[in-house]
Image 1 (cartoon, rainbow, N blue to C red):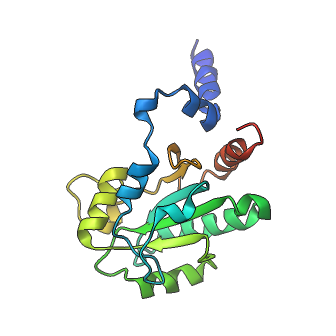
Image 2 (image 1 turned 90 degrees about the horizontal axis):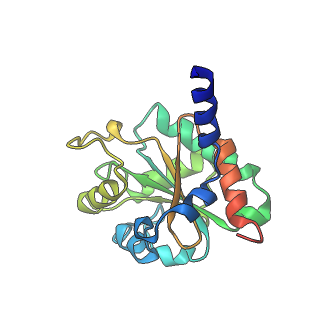
Length: 195
């Protein structure tokens, strides 16, 4: 019986995110408008106002970082950079990445630009975002990206999130280490001709 339970659980965990999303009632899906509202007021590594409409029709990967992190953040950034470079060019053109700093007091655009260069982040497709403490608090609350009641940036989530082309969250993935195989499978499913 114990073996059967383990096999059943394993079977459930490999259901593609696209199938899970299709089964969810519409009320649980975030609208593209709410995606834009959540990111309102943020600026990117080039100190440009961030506008999610620039990513209209593209898949989006979102993660949370801070440049002073010496453990999970640089590891995850390196894994995301490697993952991104491993994708075929046609698929890369359909995918954008957002890395949101949870430390707005220290992570200004210049620091984020330097940080992004460490990982050879393509600034046209990979935006490192910061903003006022209030704007970052709104984003981290929306994503439950910080431990409740915690202001220390070290207590942020290491999860990576995938949004479809309509900017509805599809799935959350382990980010340390990055769940590359599942992320790749879900991106391929979402970009398949019949998707």
